[in-house]
Length: 199
Image 1 (cartoon, rainbow, N blue to C red):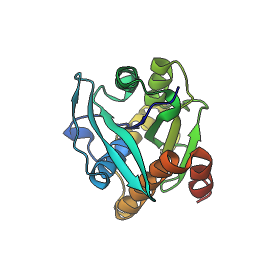
Image 2 (image 1 turned 180 degrees about the vertical axis):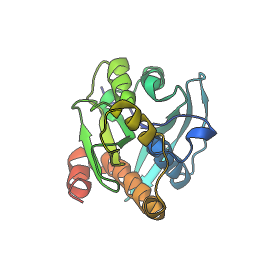
Image 3 (image 1 turned 90 degrees about the horizontal axis):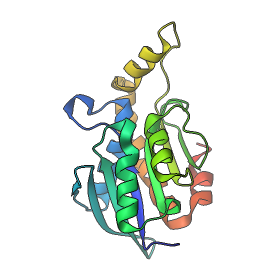
Image 4 (image 1 turned 135 degrees about the horizontal axis):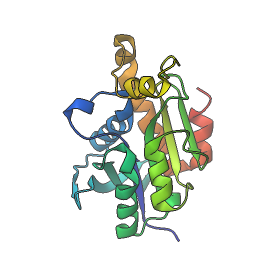
């Protein structure tokens, strides 16, 4: 089954207190794509902000939906599955953009399938879609020092903000993430992996 649409989902937590935190990298990348693709987003069933449009790149046109789930990270799958179901979009045409603690800040890894790696947003999407066969653009945020309160340190880390040095590089990093999303959509997963995974 091939839909005429792609779905790009940037993950994060809604609300001012989460703006600019590491866990909201997906939201930040989605905001950049919305700007790049000149799309405005509105409410979808109270679950997400959703916009649609046509991306014109390299002489080809690609129809898409762009979303930011409003369900909080741990229930991201509810929003993604609702949109896929409503618009008949198969998992193979979904791209999820999210933060990843297993990668150093600035690293990007494009993949499909595989484990959630402790990321609750990805775990929720796997569960709600009933598959992990969608593409993921993983944006590295590094990880906290591991200590006796490892779980709390991890929570504090992902909900923390970037260092001034990282902030100075954030715009370029997010632009690379947006480029990776566009490459998956227009040239395929393999090409995106070749272009971005080795950086």
